[in-house]
Image (cartoon, rainbow, N blue to C red; front, side, top):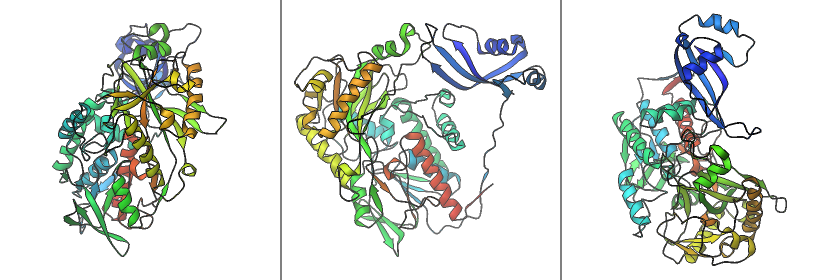
Length: 539
């Protein structure tokens, strides 16, 4: 198989991939047996009026001698033999003799993939999820968004699939680890579209993720695992510095010596329980701010120019960064959701939190993104839970500003930049449900957040003309960009630094920043445990 890299194809080119490959290799299309896409990206940069280009990496099987073709183009850096995939081989031992079944707390990406890895090894994990299954959870979330009651254990933060289920479902990662490829292939096998294996910016969307996590759960159960919903771990009992059991819903004790802790970044009661038990943790930097909304066609036009609206192109996104020279803080876009919605993402009473979500087709007509300012432990000095308290203080203020009914405080960019408030005419109709109320973010967010945020918006307007026009809508507050603390663990064993048998994993433990990195962290921790317990051989 021959690999063609960095193959640029104009958006106006109607040739088939077979024809494109044949032309590149100076062959007849009949000489090309098959073409598989290894990577696909969109290059929307402007080159003196040149059209948008698709950049491909293609794996080609020929009907003629491939080695001769490779020799013919040996000086062409874009043509090579396709690399053979050579992974470490993991062999699960048949004589497993663990005293207890491992327990996985939380069924978000980290917990799901830790549990799947354990189940494939025949270790029959018990998964304890405080929230509900994804279908029941979705019903509770929709009820809350429609103005109904908040379920504190079944919401955007808690339940099957974790917080990532009600998000854009991005599967981007900076890592080229084979683990990432394995995760992507698992997603496909559980119902995600195959294109996520090769797109530069793959995403699934909430609608498809809900189906994927159900299929993943069924596979774990088929392999001998148990998944229990509405099962909150209210205590982890220790003996001589080692996990000895977990307490579920304050009443049931399950003995175990192994716990994978994938609780997510909003399990504040669990954080406090661990802190009170002396589990080593530390506060860490994160970021807070607001959501900004634009018509999707506005972002498409800004990014694609005259090609905006072409059905070959996905809904456009953006990634914006700014370093504030006055405060030395970073301001950046986060969790940008093309064709999505701003959603109510609180898990607790009297707290107002936003997040961004989209479905697979990204066809809402609205683009939204968090615009955040970095904060650090110097801003909320204290113990390891000081960042949590800092978040809660802001969320309480936002709840009050919204009317104490989970309406979101909103403000125009123009008011935010000029010191005014109260404008109610917006560039876009707010997508946030159950509703919004005009407010002043300067009374919710601290000055060290709002001032860099203002300068950042002005800088972003220079990159995307009109980004910060007067009537653009801001919705708040965005406080859950990442965990405000880190549960300290051993770099090699993945165990808690001071509690044996406790494996903090994923975003909630402070070691990941999205679906893919969280899933990978869960897998690596499970493999580290299995290596330590001598249940696998890795070659």
